[in-house]
Structures are given as structure tokens and as C-alpha cells.
Image 1 (cartoon, rainbow, N blue to C red):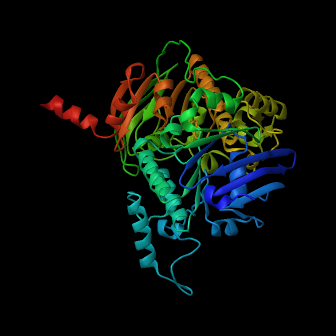
Image 2 (spheres, one colour; image 1 turned 180 degrees about the horizontal axis):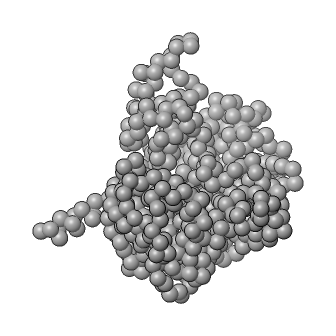
Image 3 (cartoon, rainbow, N blue to C red; image 1 turned 90 degrees about the horizontal axis):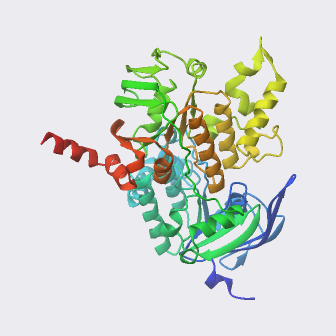
Length: 510
């Protein structure tokens, strides 16, 4: 038998995993070398996350072999695999919201003696870890109160408290913007230098040459190919992933901009620190909201949708001023919908079926005098399952059993079924593969053609530029610049998202 220990940290051979009615993994092989970033790609439902859950001990394979540093693994459970040096950061974070940052980092091995926890030492160690990662995070803050980007870094810090050999990262940059991504890549490079192997699941094509050494593609639960990153093109990767050519990802149809449907004037929110927000959106256009994580994009969307209160300002919808104390239900009735970033906690009820989730926000349309019109419900559900290509065995499947990308599509269907005139998309393609992204972009384009007004929040610069007609850039909870998307670069947007606008303002004053 060859010496596996010197060549590979991980060898997975002929792994098969079957769930009731679904062969999630079909004879899949995968390996990882010390100090490499091995990117794992495939469409939603391709089996990537299932394969990694086998490696992390969350699933027991029905067939196949797993070796860690040359040792054959016979016991599959998360604790045993963690002791072998396997760490995993899931796409849906596993932080406990009512515990603080330090407690989450050391959740399974808090420092101290006996029942006494050394809280001062724990916070000091947590702060040291985060400082090494060049992250400013309050270790006393509850996990539920910190931004998603900081939650991601807390998950990384949590993994680093163990004796790591392998770190699995599932869509680690999905909720991050430029600067945060650079910080994460810096951490990954430092882990590589220590000989730690990184398995990196991503749908962002531009990240492959930036961070990867090798790339493995999966499709429909099967292994397709493994190539060195510098020997394969993006088009070749996409073709292997989806089994077809995708073409122009951001292709937009010609359409004319209509009248102003939404206007926000001098909006202030003390709680969310939004300051003097002014913007407008026209029928038939897609308006991008860009900025770093924490710039206030989601907070602005929630204020417009009246999820969160605001103290001052005017919101005018279809020439009607919306009262400050209006409820979310009133906004839905008036034709506004918000597709949230956090599908797991804000977008779905995971214990309900696909069908129940899709019609949840539009019950008024399909019920009369308290009675549900089942035929109308079925028509709406089948329409959106078909239009959004939601992969589910049936409409009665529980949302919890779908892949992350298909869960996201159910959230889209839920809010699109309200037939809103103004639709706010908050990170609409987070965790969605390239094929599904094209479907969502095409759907958004069709909505704009129909005269709908779309506000799109995205941390993906090519997406913002490729899909938007106009772009508002936010920094420090303010809109600092409005840009025409037809003549803008990523560098221009980033300069305003950082400090560029201040320089311009100073030049104008001089």
C-alpha cells in the first residue's frame, strides 16, 4: 500500500451516500494535499456539502473509504473527526445567538478548572485570535448583534482553537464584500503557510484564480473532474458544472425606464444610524445598492419595508406618502416586497413545506372569508416551481430538506407571488450556483421588462455592475454617490465605498 501520509491530508475514495429517494453521492473520490486550497465546485444539489459532511463526520457514508493523514477512518461522528484535525465552517453559521463572541469561539472547550470558567482569560484569548486575523470584534457582544461578516470571522476563530489539519469552508465569502474578502484571503494564505489544507466551496468564479491551487467539479452527485487552477478556464469550469454553455451571465434586455414609483427623502434612523438618505427608483429599472458590509444597505431596505422604525423622513410610493407607523402588512398590500439576505432565519419556515412557504406572504390572494382556495394555491406553487426551476421531489417537501440554493429560490417565489410593484432583493444570489444565478438574473430582467421596480443589494461587484441601471454607493450609513452602471468600474465603486467620495467633496470645496 502506498504511503498516503506524506502525499495527502485527506483521501476520500468511492464515497456513496443515499437518502430516501435520492442518491446524493455516487462513487465520489476526492483528495487534499497539505498547504493547498482545493476548490470544490458544482451546481446546487451537486453533492458538495454532502461530501464535506461525510468528511466532517456529520454523515456516515453507505460505501467508500476515508483516510486522514494516511489513517483509515472507521468511526464517523463530528467529535471523532474534529479530533483528527477536521474543522468545518458551514454556509449557515452555527453560532449560538444568545452567547457572546468569546463564548461561541470556545463553546466546546471553555478555559478554566472544573466548573469554574476563566472568563477573563477566555476573552483575552478570543481577542488575541481575532487580532491576529486583523478583525475588530467586541468579544463581549452577543453573536446575534454583530454583522454577518464578523460572524464569519468568529466561525474561523472558533475552528482555529482546535488542532487543525483541514479547514472546510462552505461559501465563506457569500456575505462579504471586497475588504472583508481580502482579510479572509489573507487568513487563508497564513493557514496555507502552516501546512493546513483548505477545502473551499464557492460559486464565485472570480475567486478561483485568486485563492485556489486545484479545482474539483461535481455534478448530480458524481465526480466530474479535477484540474490545476492555472490549467483550466472559467468557461471550461462552468461547462463541466452545468453540462452546457451558459453564455453571457448578465445579459439584459432593452427596456425603457418609466415614471418614479418609489422616492425616499431625508430618511433618518437613530437605531440603525441611517443619516439623510435620499433615493428614487423608477418603473422598469434595477437600482443597485453597493457598499461594504456594515455600510447600512440592509438597514435601509428594512426601513423602507417598515420592518425597522425610522424617526424622520418621507417615503413616497406611487405618489402616496406612506405613514411612518405603517406596518409590513400594509407595505405588502401597497405592492412592496423584501427578499431578505438571511433565508434560514428571516426568509423561510424550515419545518413547513415548499408549498406553504411559497404562499405564506400572499394568503390574501388565495383565500376568501378565511377559506383557502387550494386550486389557486396549487397553481401559484407550480408556476413558481417551474419558472424558478426549484429542484424538489414535490411541493409538499419540507424546506429544510432542500439544498441552500433551492431554499433561496423558494424565498424568491414566496415574495414574487405577492405580485409586488417594488421588489427589494437583498443578496439574491448568495449561495446560488452559476446556472441558477443566470436563471435568477433572467427572472429579474423579465420583471424589469414588465415595469417592476427593483432594488438590488449585492456584495458581488460584477453582479452590481452587470445587472444595475443605476448604482447608489453607501458608506457609514449614508448614500455617498449615485453612479450610472453603464460607465463604471469596480475600482470606482470601491473608492466611494471607502474614502474616495470624501476626497471629491474636499476638491469641490477647494
